[in-house]
Length: 111
Length: 111
Image (tube, rainbow over the protein chains, first blue to last red):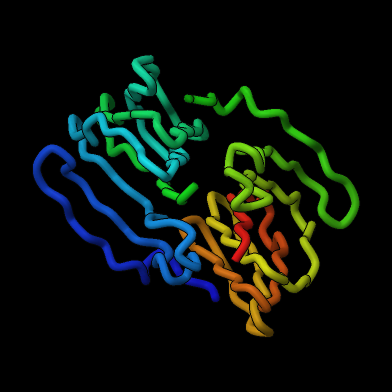
């Protein structure tokens, strides 16, 4: 099944996580192996606050923009093509520190 | 863990699938929930031939270029931002029909 970019329902988020989320696959399509496969954008200055993963792991693939990731207490700048892998029991945050939109794919799979 | 784009080992492929493959996560990092999470490029004219998935499903996310996908016998052109979801028991192929490199993420998870 081909799903064109414009067919995804875009959900606007406000507040700290200001930006958008496009769910690319449902949990059911993922055979309930995960709970998220989405394209996320963060407006300039917006962030997803530090949080710890329990019984799942998350992968980000940066599509565009400039972010600051804190991953297990280590700060690193990220750009297009970078991957952030946060394993079960680990914590991370991501903040848009660039002037443009930060855009990434996020996937959460159960361990 | 942040993995910068340039840290990935790039593997060159020749023949029908001419292009590159960058493994973004190992099967072990994926807790053996899947067997592939990679960034793939196909040179102009190159293709991944029609094949059927058994006991797993595959997701493509098109990053750049123009492809022709055959998915369950339906032909569709794909571009950046499009998603191809090929479920267990389904078949697909992808061919670079543009003048530039076709670039996409591919992930195979077990059902």
